[in-house]
Image (cartoon, rainbow, N blue to C red):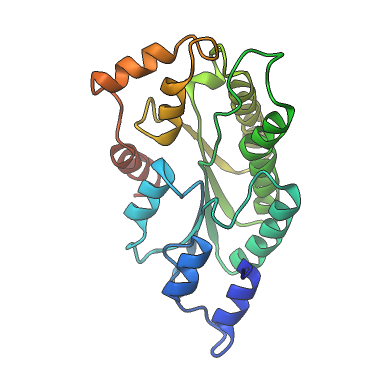
Length: 245
């Protein structure tokens, strides 16, 4: 298993410039590595599926940005040590760019169920993916002193409690407050983007849960049956048009 750092070093070995290596990029879950003529870099977490994948598919052919998709294949955001190593490599990778966009998309819905019946390890893992890891990434990117734009994929559950979603609601709300403080403290462009109810793996989890775990599971199933779920592709187009056009 090759680390991102070893891949980066190998890519620069001959000319001092990284070149796109499809095989290595595929192994690392990095879908669009290109030469460095551009000044803007876009970091996206959670690119294995759903909105993150749709964003990568939409942005990968753009020649004005350097795309760094971080999928769960090689970036375990539930592991603090792995995230520290990732942050260190990111800072090196991004040092030459004058503008950085961080799209905080990765999130997990589990554990589901009433408080008191939740698995502790799942709670800790979710807190790291949804809150701790993006904190560490945002903190490191602010330290670089570049023009920084943060786009946080938020949810109505950050503002309104959903029974059975306690950890998801709490961690999303915590991230929103962190970004509110960041916006007040620094000259950082912060956006919270609520995609609404999308047709994703997370939404499938929500509607597949037992009513005893998530009383509103039936509502989510009905939205699917009625064709009222937004496609990740349409949401990606809206986000790009609003913030990255």
